[in-house]
Structure formats: C-alpha cells, structure tokens
Image (cartoon, rainbow, N blue to C red; front, side, top):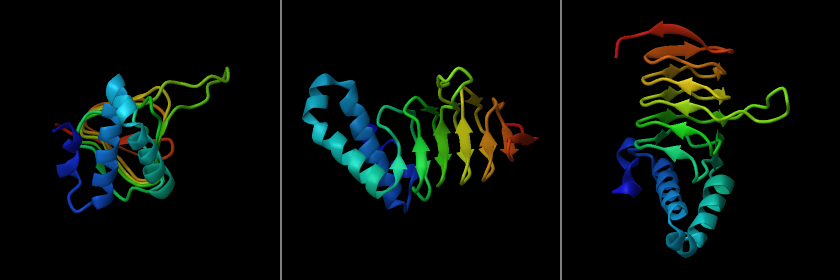
Length: 165
C-alpha cells in the first residue's frame, strides 16, 4: 500500500515510520483536490508535528520514490523541489536543497538516484545529480554531479572509490 512504502526500510524506527506515513498521507492529499480539502487538518498536523516537534523539514511536495530510510530524524532539511530515488538512506543534520546563484536567483534542487546512502552532517546543494548506488561520507559538501557506483567524501566532496554494481 502507498502509505507503507517506507515501512520495512525503517525497522525498529518508530520516528522514521511516523514521519514517512505522515509524509505519504500528506503527499496523497496534495495530488487530489477532493482529498486535499478533506485532509487539510492532516497537512497542518504533519507540518506541526514533523517540523516543529521532530525537527525534520520534509515537505509533502517532495518527490520520494519508495523505501526511504530515516536514521536519527533530527535537523534534516530537504527542499520541496528535491527528487529522491528508491531505497535511499538519510541521516541527521543533512541539508538537501538549492544554492543562490550569482544573479541572486536560486538553482534547481538536487536529484538523488536509487540506493544513495547519505551520511550524517552532509550538505547537497545546487542543480546536481547523484547517481545510483552512491555512498556519501559524513560531513561531505556535495556541489557537483556524482556518477553511479561511487563513494565520495570531503569538503568539497570528491570520489575516493568506484565499484561494480
């Protein structure tokens, strides 16, 4: 079922399950006008509980395929224009979003492929693509495209290893 797309990826993680069920229900509500009006209280409750009390900014307009795992859901900030592939892992204190361009406008958001494992305290910003099967080390700042099957670390992030899928 659509509401439980991420359930099995968050075992023993009540907070992750709560956030993802609230996200999925809110996301469904925004796709259907009738449901939207019926679920306006859900949208408000989601924002209050998830953003204010749990400290996770995961807007319900964000595109997340399925199987997202949230470890230690604190200080997570994801821009609503971000696209997150299947079976990704996000850890605490991670920011995924836009950057301010030279003309003062904002860039597009990052696109994460499938099976991307994001370490703690990572910043992924700008109009970039992160390939499939990528591991991003803790504390990395990612501002350039990353090819499939890579391990990246550092500030700015650089590829330290590639592997066969």
